[in-house]
Image (tube, rainbow, N blue to C red; front, side, top):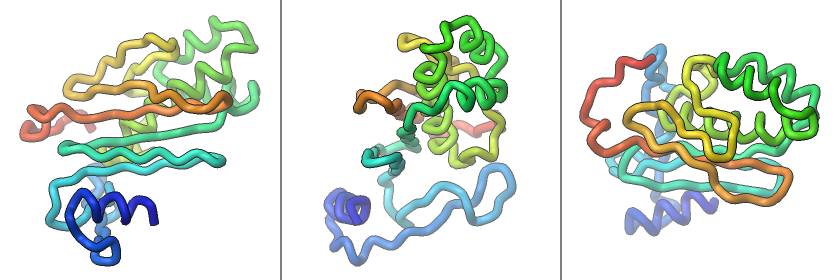
Length: 172
């Protein structure tokens, strides 16, 4: 409901008249890609975890993610699916620091993949986004950053640069 209310305000449209559709998936062409409001230039993304909700709106593709910090075992197991440099960074941290670092990079990756419109259909090992708080993402045409949230969570936002929108995407 909150998403529809905010989109209605951005689009100067009654919330009940905001109708959602799905873009074609960039990987397979099926209609399960990024949600959109047909015919409108506002890009948006939504994520929630526990009691937190994160929304983003932009003129270009955008993705957000918020995640609860998991147990050490989950961070170590799933961390193996990350970019090789990120997996190595995680292994180099003290065990007590691994879950927060894992969650930080996972939120960055999910935000980026939502921005691309592919979600978890793209391998988490392809792009380096870093586990450190001050890591700089190596994804041309995108700005990816952390969002301050409550302790026990990590969140991120990814926004495509306006000049990259008109260029073809051959990264998939």
